[in-house]
Image 1 (cartoon, rainbow, N blue to C red):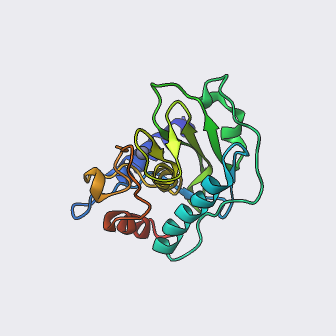
Image 2: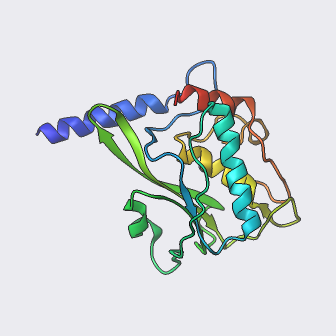
Amino acid sequence: MKKKFLSILLAVSMLLMALPTSSSAYVLIGGRIAIVGNMIPSANFTSATITHMGQMFNLWNNAAGKTLMTISSSRHYDDDTSANYRSHAAMYDKQHKTYREERGEYSAVGQMYGTRVTDFWLGTKIESADILINMQYSFANSAQPNRYDTATVFLHEAGHALGLGESNLQSFQSIMHQQMFMNVERRYLYQDDINAIKAKNY
Ligand SMILES: [Zn+2]
């Protein structure tokens, strides 16, 4: 009974956190990153792509005024296209990883899967944040016809990993809008994104 009450409280508080304030369009989702400073990329990404990932995290770090996440010098070999990713053991490994996986045409270009824990003193924490690049689609390390710029997709997913939701603004007013375009390179944050990460109050 006690447990049920707690889960309802948690659901209500997460709902409140998801409501944008009247003066802004960004959306904050529950929790803040718990393990700061280390996202491990798949060894299957090129070194150029991995370098870009670090640069994209630095955009968020600079906006937040502190280092929230960097790209690890380690590499993992855990890409898995055989199973439903949601049952992937790596989701619960308390590490942050970037995956390069074929997820099919019904999955998004990029996805972020996180696990959250609630600490009695510290509140909700994102304990594991995994960013998945769907190789069903074609990517490039720049703006190219019929391809997505990997860094642009990664910048959006990195925002999710740091606790931001989809922005209510139009795509070209926020990197956190859910729509991505091919042949477009947007490796910068908009004012709404900067406001969002500041509001996160890391
Ligand atoms: Zn998104």
